[in-house]
Length: 465
Image 1 (cartoon, helix red, strand yellow):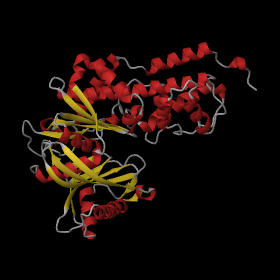
Image 2 (spheres, rainbow, N blue to C red):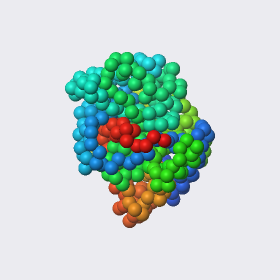
Image 3 (cartoon, rainbow, N blue to C red):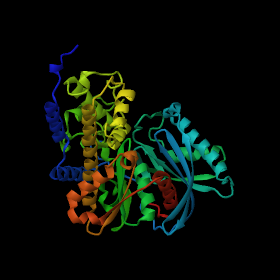
């Protein structure tokens, strides 16, 4: 039995918590520095096509804003994680959209293996969906856009190759393969009356969806398992593709930033803690997507878990008692953080349930639970403030604040993590003062599918380059 004299007293615990809070604090000037450094990386990414760019700034070849007055029926298909969603999107004009949708589960065997298996699954799902919406008439083929939550190398709206299969996908045989062409071939072989017109990244899709409703939308931001952003950039700023087409002075193109890579080769760009360094070093892709590992849902819980284990090692928590569950990497999910931050019961009963029944700690005190809640708050707050700094970099790039702008946001962390939107707003208010009122932030749901459908519509109407 361990002597109680070896455990930290309440005063020591409080001192250690305050010390930790200081490490996770980001003051307004630090946010400005992060924003400035990200802006520099973005400008560099607009000039280079190689992997030396931490922020890749990928052109989408979407060269026309929706007007909100377009009408018609299109199919949007959104592949994200373990789910394939297919939408029949009806554009009614006046910024009004209605949808019908079905959701299909992507089985694990489709995530690992030949690209043709995944493409065939998409084609079969489209066939099933057309039957569901009674749109199988071969005399009236529908146009389809594909939205896919992986980085895309594109030379046109209808020519897109996946640069890297991220998350838990390990697809083979897809190098330099055009997804639009592959899917069209699979549909044609099954005589399915659908014409694949476009492919877009998830962030670009969400930006298109919000732009149809709000014409002043500048950027779209995703904070979910991962993070990304897309925005409207002046086409002439994309100097790395200037030999591909002649841009008119006022022409704009959606650029997908891939801002998760910010800081990959310049770790000093973002204030790190010991725990961030450890998450990065022990991840499946060390040194890649450093910014994402500080803000995205896949990693926030792991940061908290490492802190809890460290505090337990130092006899600051849980009477120095462990559990196999707490010792298992990525076993403390960001959803647990959400539940803990939301817990307002006097004894923090929900937190107690998670720690003792889910993480299988033998027992916890109220002080333990209060400390865990504070740790979740500081990690979650820092993530929100970093997202605000990143948003401000895009606003600065387009010098958009004076005329006002709308921002589209989506993702499980932003939508469901307690106080995340408020923390983003607070940080933006610190950065902009009263001018923050010129920024309108709205949540876009089903943005990937709707945006894919809009991409198909735009591909049919914008001039070829």
